[in-house]
Image (cartoon, rainbow, N blue to C red; front, side):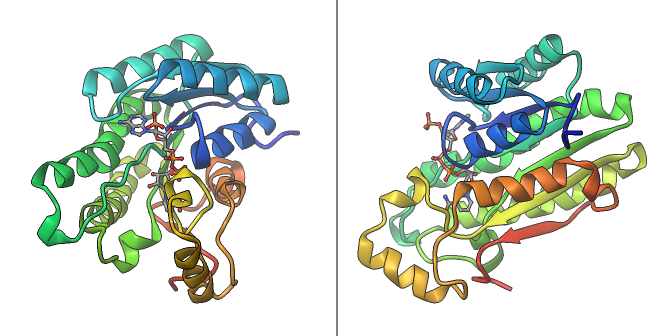
Length: 248
Ligand code: NAP
């Protein structure tokens, strides 16, 4: 039996990168998956690719997670298509890096708005259904820099640290209804977000990582799959680091 047979999931920021790998992994394990990303056409293309590869039922949705009405609509559309929402992965995220003295207040706001408020809005919308159903999983994609801090990323690391606080609070609030909330904290993963780094910076980063290399999106997807399935039924409010030992 597949690990997510009969489950319905929505993954934000799933048109590419880590989100796409998570959506693909869930579909391969039998889940119906809504691919929700900023660009509706990209979401639909990714959803079609997932169905072609896995045969799973999918849905492509355009949304901006920083907008409450978009989040409410995405959850409604997913429930309409699949009959329920069992799993939410808050993966959509952006960076607007700069040293604090040069960081514009609006660049602080926009990163918090997508990475942190967006996850709150999606969790709020999904929890209406999950709390009623007395079952559900919410997985928030945080980051190693939310745990360690990072020069040049005050906005991003604050948003990702905030996501850990949000995860723990939601976990406590939703536990009585068997809705489990956990975070995954990836280290440096090879996606568009990190491909802009110069080779020299990548080599330096790899030297700092005990396992000696950057991670792959599929390696983060496996952690999300664990937290979405029955193998993690007694785990809530936790942060699962997928960072090659970079931060312990
Ligand atoms: P990515 O390739 O840039 O993918 C992020 C996706 O989120 C993109 O498709 C993007 O859409 C979408 N998105 C951006 N703003 C959105 C919004 N307001 N509403 C809906 N979707 C939005 O990044 P990634 O590396 O896969 O990262 C995925 C998650 O992992 C992020 O939360 C990131 O912070 C986290 N993470 C990544 C790493 C890493 O090393 N890569 C490490 C730790 C944590 P557009 O392409 O249209 O902008």
